[in-house]
Image (cartoon, rainbow, N blue to C red; front, side, top):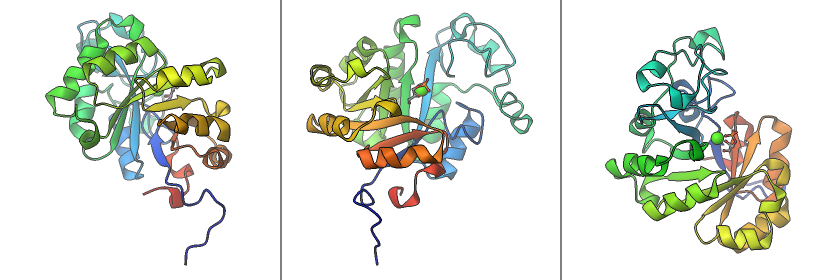
Length: 255
Ligand code: G3P
Ligand code: CA
């Protein structure tokens, strides 16, 4: 017997582990991504930057200061310099020695196991980052959307348009925390190249999800860090919840 608690219980909502299961392991590390798989999230979300010598690295901030034992801008450090850093201890001593991953490592370990939501972070700092990400996906035959379960998102709309021209089959997500980006006119414009509109959760209403759905796009809301933040999003009809705590999304909505 299926007991229906409310009209949104049937709706399947994707669970996206934000920077991996970053409530349980250091953000943007292999440990956090493995935890997300273990917790049966549908996707991992990660942030991509470019090292001084042109490698794609997975870290959130523009500097290594907050999440590692090093200092400096990501773009001013070589990959070798970054790989020596400890990206785990800031979270908990049990994760000491956890390195900054490269995008290549993440794609190699996780493709086929879990969806991958790649954020182009601060792409204005890294001219050509779109081609580097496109090459990494293409090299692995992950450039054909539906087989790969990869989405590319950014707050930087021009960067997304550049990426979309390179790999038109990969779904694109527009990130925003500004209500001014969510007018009908803006949504019409996003629909010309994007498949997802991913707003900060405080901007999500049933009216907004309706207007995004009417244009054939989906909605992934971010970032859930408290259990009480989940239900309003489910009621508003979002398609995905980006969260540090994948277990906060009720199992009736998960696979
Ligand atoms: O996926 C949405 C979210 O990651 C955007 O914000 O700062 O956590 O990268 P931020
Ligand atoms: Ca992000």
